[in-house]
Amino acid sequence: MKAIVVKKHGDVDQMEVQDLQAPAPQDGDLLVAVKAAGVNFADVLSRLGIYKAAPKPPFVPGIEVAGVVEAFGGGVTGFAKGDRVMGFCTFGGYAERVVLPAAYAMKVPQDMTFNEAAAFPVQYLTAYHGLIQLGHVRQRDTVLVHAAAGGVGIACLQILNAVGAKVYATVSTEVKGKVVLEECPRARIVNYAVEDFAAAIRAETGGRGVDVVMDSVGGDTFKRSWGLLAPFGRHILFGAAAAVRPGAIARLGALWRLRRMLLVSPLAMIDRNRTLSAFNLYHLPDRADLMDEAVRALLDLRSKGVVKPRVGLSLPLEKASEAHRRMQDRQTVGKVVLTL
Ligand SMILES: NC(=O)c1ccc[n+]([C@@H]2O[C@H](COP(=O)([O-])OP(=O)(O)OC[C@H]3O[C@@H](n4cnc5c(N)ncnc54)[C@H](OP(=O)(O)O)[C@@H]3O)[C@@H](O)[C@H]2O)c1
Image (cartoon, rainbow, N blue to C red; front, side, top):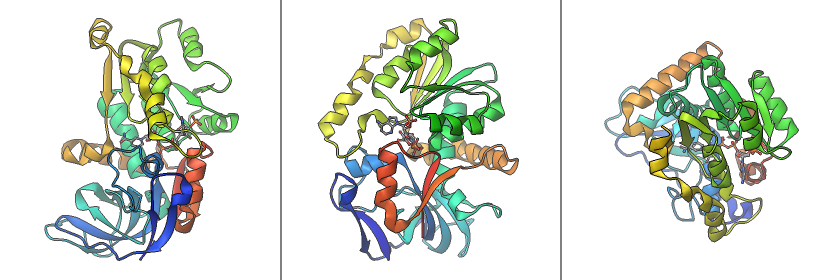
């Protein structure tokens, strides 16, 4: 089968198309013929060598796919050959075939395309778990969403439309600001390339700050957002994009850019009733109750038209390097999908 292989950690030229043997499903697995693969920022981090859960090179990146069940291992119930499925996998998604643990898979609704399905599981489960299950967002809350025009960012905005909370959305360009307003007209856009996001939000909230922060950036952004948290505030940390710079990367440089995150004082958290939550979506299927609740709620929101993945870029599998280049250089909006 055709697959994209990361030969060594490094820049996008370390990825190439290779012909590999298809994987075999074990107990509890589905073998899926991939029709579309979601590109996630975690794939970029994996290629660069700064994503802890990633295998050592050579490896096939890709943690999210949509496709058709071709076969399954023992003990699988609820799925049949020919089912259209979507879900997240433990790497191997940038390929014609992948093994998808049944616990991480869900059926694709009839009116959903494969492209849309490859844009759904990771982004929307991340947004829902962060905002609702950890952040307990309510209508009265003010929420700060970083990287708001990105895949997870737009999923957050759509969920927040349903909740009715007040939204501050950070972006790095005017074009991204326009995309955010299309998704969430009530949002106050903060273009951090032209204004200091923390100073602007502090001034506009009369010094109170925000109730919830959705933080996928970390580093200095973490520190300044943490400082904006109102009493009873919840800071949801789920990424470290600050580690990345355009082009190649050194692991030491990445750690250096994240160093300022180490300054949280647990005692000060008590004093100001602040909460810090952090999560990796990979572990969500370990809590089947939370996973089921999130999937049900999201599919319901989608059927009502409240949430809808926005695929900003769709490229053939062979162009995975270009997809990574654009994501790493912050040139993408919404979801990036590779098609097969
Ligand atoms: N913990 C989890 O389970 C989990 C699951 C899914 C995603 N995530 C995290 O959530 C974030 C969003 O993921 P995504 O796949 O939807 O990607 P994305 O938001 O579509 O793309 C990343 C965005 O991050 C922003 N960014 C800020 N600093 C950056 C930097 N130094 N280098 C590159 N981009 C930077 C950019 O937006 P601006 O130009 O507007 O700043 C960029 O467009 C990522 O950090 C990802 O690792 C975590």
